[in-house]
Structures are given as structure tokens and as C-alpha cells.
Length: 271
Length: 271
Image (tube, rainbow over all chains, first blue to last red; front, side, top):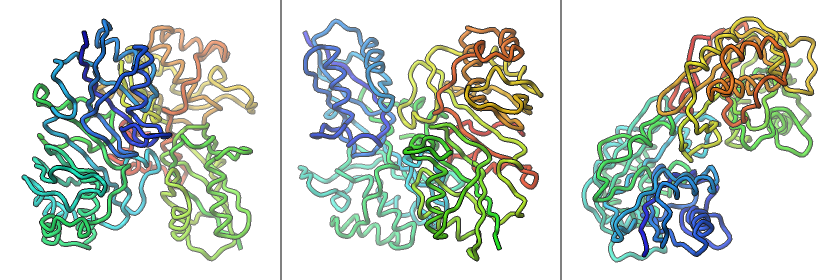
């Protein structure tokens, strides 16, 4: 009799070629599957809410797996944490109804992108932000980001090589926040995201911040549905998957984010 | 005519075998000297306030070098930052009197050690703290740390293989702070530090926190001047050199520390 388990997973993205298994490259999915396979002595597949790109960090990625086991959920957490490298942490393991599916049941995802905008950036943990030397016009970026809220065809911000049934998505929140001293965060909360969508949005919003693009032109880029019109893909190092919400977890695990345990600025807003 | 330059340097310690040049291992000193040597087309020696161990981070290490050059100090900063990897940042380069010596003129140094004390720690930037699962008795650690203030022979906390004229040092501040959510910092501000002294103090204070040693026994360890009585050396990953003070810079570059740009807890106290 199989049980379904939900994992809440944090990872430091730098050493991994993203979430999803790749030939000959370390990935988060592979590390967790190998640990579970060792525990259960048979192959296990772990399905996440979605992929994250190479180098992207996660505060609370969600995944599920099925196993015919008598091991209680808490034991899985302890055993996995003792087997996994420090760059992957299991924050929770819960038994869930067998109908639970980490990808199909995900209702909302929240991403935060960290920028340090000053002539000189810290050397400490430089793989957790994008360093931009020239001053960003935050007011213009906020104005542009406001155009993103709601339901739109985000085709202009989709990476190539990932055909989808539809490129329409809903953003509940898209905001830019200036924390002072040069820390700027961009937060996106939405029903789902296309490949490279967050990083393409960030790259194009930074073009607005650097006055290469006006907020009005940004709106036109969104409406054009043409990737050629949008800006470059922002580096993955600044991107954090902060939460994934399901029907039964409408509220965010705020403990993990608005906290001195994490880089500043990961959490803002009610979404 | 040689000019003396003072550098204020931040580095992420993880990829380096410490500050000081080592055969066949990457070090911070080597990276900076190689960059300066390329700029000036002749060998340059950079002298820091002191070594830092392999894996130890620095928010504001100070060093000096001498060069017969017409290049202004600001240009050195820009040029070095463009040549150095992101794990090393030059925060300032200033022309100083030729009598300035980064090591001999240093008056005070401040170190902060970060601990995350909870059953499960974040995966993000796990190389910036020591994860301790069992609950620490912070009150006992504070009581023990109070014995460190003042002038003492710190021989019990000195690493081997580093004979010194004297093992007497003065600590102006030695404090333990609980930031909540499991973040605990230990801060030491002193006239100078022996080899491994901060990490040995942290390891022994953690023994107090885990009730392996009482605060009274901690005092006796200090007074014993016997390394065998002290605890293990704490891992280097949690240690940050936060500042080095000189006669002309009595106040700390607080901008670099009490800031959303750095891991939480690096700065506390007036020292």
C-alpha cells in the first residue's frame, strides 16, 4: 500500500545544474532521489512543483514521492537531512492524500530576485545577488512592473525550447522594493511561470531601471508577445523560489523567509 | 618615490586557503598580489593586518602595499575590482603616510562568529554559519564569555605551531547575542588574537552552551593556560573578520556590516 509524502526543500543553487535530473551533472532531484533510493532500497521518483534553472536557489521548493513503506514522515526528514549535503535541506516531510501532486496541485508560486545596486558589492555570498553598478531608477521600475499584474499572455518573456499549450499566466503580485543601501528586490507571485519567465522579466525591468526602456515601452513589449523585444535573461544567482502554495497551505511558511536566517529581502507582501 | 596604499578588502573565504600565500593553493593575498603585479608590471607584496584561516570570511580586512606609481588610489580600487574574482572586493584604496603598516599599526580587531542553533538549518549560504542542532544555553554562554573581557594570558586557546613572544592579549568585548529564530552570534573585539584563538574560544563556549562545561570551569580553562583543557576548534565557515581599527580610523565602517547587504548579526556593540 503506497503512501504519498510531501517534501518542503531548501537548496543553495550554485553547485547544481538546477532541479531536474541531467546526464552527468549534479541536480537537486538526483541527490534527493538517490538518498531516498538508498533508504528504501528501490528506485524512487521525486516530482517537484516545477523545475528551477541551474544556479537558482530555493527557500521552500515542494515535491512529492510515493513509497510502500512503514517509515513515518518525520523519520524521512531526519534520515534525508543526514544523507544530503548541506546545500540541500528538507524543512518538512508530511504524509498527504494520495491525490496530492506537487506540480498539478500547485496554486501559486512566489519568486524573489535580489539585486545589489551600488558601485561596489560585498564579496560575501556574492552568488545570492546580481550586482548592478549603475543607479537604477526604482520609480520607473515600479511603474513598469505594475503593468504585469493580472492575466496576460507572457510569450514575450518565455525562453525558447519549451513549447506549452498556453503562454497565458496570472500574476497576483509583481513588485519592486528598495530596501536601502543598494538592496533592491523584485517579487513575483503567480499561478505559474514559463521557462526563464522571471529572469526575463527581471532583465527587462532592469533595462527600465537603466533608462534603456520606458515603462510605456515595457508595456508594449508585454503586449507584443515577441521575445525579441524583451531584455536579456538576468543571471540565475539572484533568483530564489520562496514558496509554493497549495489548497491546504494557503499561507506561506513565513518563518523560513522573513528571518535573520536568510539573505535580506526575500519576503515582502501578503501574496 | 614610493607611495603607501591602504586597502580595505572583503572576501568570501570558502574558495581560499586563507589570506596568506601557500604553495599550490589559492589564497586571497596571492590573488591581490597577482592583480597588482599585472597592473604595475613588477612584483608587489601586500601585507595584511593578520592572517585569516582557510574558509574564514572578511567584511573589512585591511592591508597595505608600496608602489612607485603615479596611479591615483581610486584607480587602484576600480582596476583591482575589475581584475579580481567576485569572491574578493576592494571596498577602499587610500594613500596613507609611508609609516603606515597594516599589521604593526592595527589597534583593534573585531570578529563575529555566526551559529544557527535549531534542529534544521537553511541550505542557502550554509558556508556562512556553524549549524548546531542541540539547544544552546545562551545565559551560560554569556556568563562564561564575561570572564574573557580584559587582559589575560590566552595560551589555553592558542593553536599549536605558532610560537609567539607573548600569549597575553586584551579583549575589550566578548559577547554572545541571541537574535531569535536560532541565530546566535559571538563577537570578540581585541588588541590582537593568537592563532585559532577565536575559533577555540567559540568551540569552548559552545561546550558551555551544551552543558559539557560550566561557566566556572570555563574560567578555570582560561586560567590553566593549557590548550588540552579547552574545547575543539570551531569550523572556520562561521567566522567573519568584521573590522580592523587604526589610530586614524577609530570608528568602524558600519555601513559594511549593520546592513541588509551582509548575513544577519555581523555587527553588534560599540567596540
